[in-house]
Image (cartoon, rainbow, N blue to C red; front, side, top):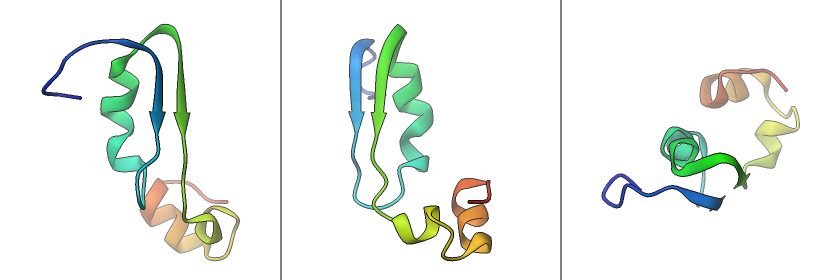
Length: 62
């Protein structure tokens, strides 16, 4: 996204692993009023399997 600085109406962020490292670039690539869709594959962490791991990866608690 940084090498092609454009703004898009819709951005689908679907990485293998943590999406948090890509969020800043993705948010900057969406036009005002656009849609950012984000997929996270580590649901065990996000659903409360381990609150400390969730905090270390995402900066929040489940």
